[in-house]
Image (cartoon, rainbow, N blue to C red; front, side, top):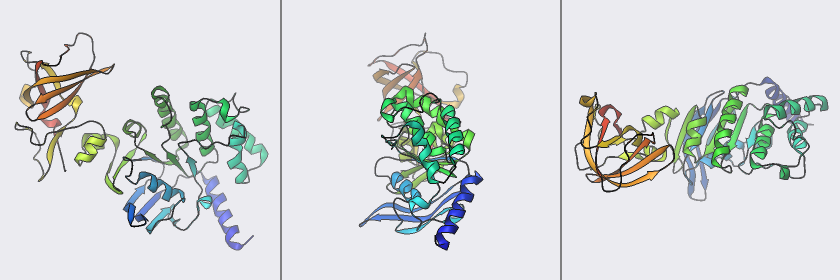
Length: 363
């Protein structure tokens, strides 16, 4: 073994046993494919122990950013640091990381126990400790009775739990998640969101998740990075991003938004609009009522407009209305509570919202 290999193994063992989550930095990272940049001048710090989600549509650069961090591709320019050390030239197999792939990437010829044992063997952990770790992890992900099964004998949710357990079992300082819930049905996806939040809280591992699912990002994340065309559009907490989007792209990508550009009526707001910005309001902040209904007690803080219902969509717990108001079609969402008046296409209605709920976003 060379001195380099010996030092690298010693450093690896120290990290693997420290259980200290990593801080990660992208410094002016660009990745070119031919003449096309997949990621442009990406600068980002992932704090120790946080759950950060990179969110964006196809082609936004989010997956490339994850592949750069994993070491599967190398940056064309810039640097990537983990725990203060540059890893831009370090191959993937020398980076101490846990990776969860959308396809789960379980070994089909190995049992659940052997799938979990593999990363421990690669790190030279002794058999007795391997067995103890596997038992604890199977119990933690509620699969203690499934250790002898093959992946093909598991449901999709069970396979996902095995893949997540395998990524966590060696106590890596950071965890990479590639569209972790994309292959699950809605009910199972919601269950796994709760499970993943619980696991992150328990293990405290720095986690970077890539997804195009807005609900998943809002549910899981401490912070969200919204990417567009290889660049960061906005970074903030889920609440701040949803409530105060900086641009029309963020407003529309992270949930639904009524962007009131040339609406055909004067939009009233408590805030002074920045130059070049347009007003926006979220659908759930708008109230719908019959035109003759009594006004709310805080009417002096609200703007009132009239519109005509174009469509009513029943969504179980919600009703969604599309309404023609001035030059715009506004979307309104309200809870389907019993006793609420239901409006039909063609009905004239009154809409109102708090002036303080109006936000201004850049084009």
